[in-house]
Length: 216
Image 1 (tube, rainbow, N blue to C red):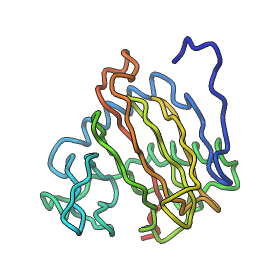
Image 2: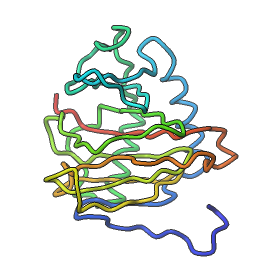
Image 3: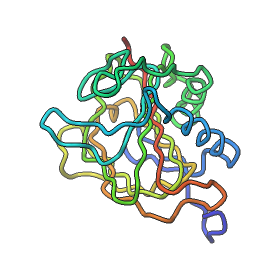
Image 4: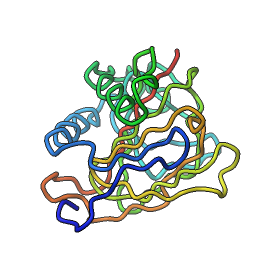
């Protein structure tokens, strides 16, 4: 909240994992929301992700650059309408590189360009189980940008889905970057707090924009 008594400080949650509150200003949040709404339109729009075991993810997803499905990448929406995946915009990749430089330092910025975006939409009942981002062929840091409702983001360890883990509150405009020794840490979203999005944004629910380097 902008009128809170004590501002939230930047924190290193684990080695190579940094939370930067309020990293996106209002204008950038509005721009990202408008772009996400365009990307969510069909073809290759927002979809429900189905797991190999027959379950479904409660957060819905749209991809840019490469289409992710459990547990691989493709150039078409192979588990949806079959349309070519939407292109990954260069400006979004530059935003990702700036996020890494700011959070982890210029030496952590990957040589290769960011070329994947996974955009997840959470309504009040959506969750994300503990998982690792392990389908890429390089270990470039993952960049996570939050819009809308606040969530509890659970950041764990590289060995198990269980403890030890740290729960971090991610609000609209927050940045979370993880790379280096934390690149393959398990993480998830056990809870979204409905109705906590800033009124000026005009979003009911939570959007998470995750940027990755594919190595493909």
